[in-house]
Length: 88
Image 1 (cartoon, rainbow, N blue to C red):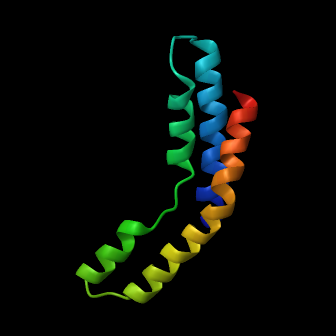
Image 2 (image 1 turned 135 degrees about the vertical axis):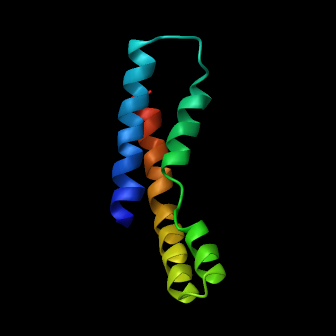
């Protein structure tokens, strides 16, 4: 699931945004394109830890998921931004 969220979804956002900006050309700043990709490649599971604490569930496991996705996004986020800059 982490691979899907940190690699596949950002790639779909890159391709989709690139197609939209090329098919419907407008005076949109490229920063908007980068913000879309950045949001799609952001780490996940931040709210899950808070919900686990509120529901008295295993917040340690939720916290480890948060740490894992954050560490993985340290690698994947710059790669996705480089791919977005190449395609734009």
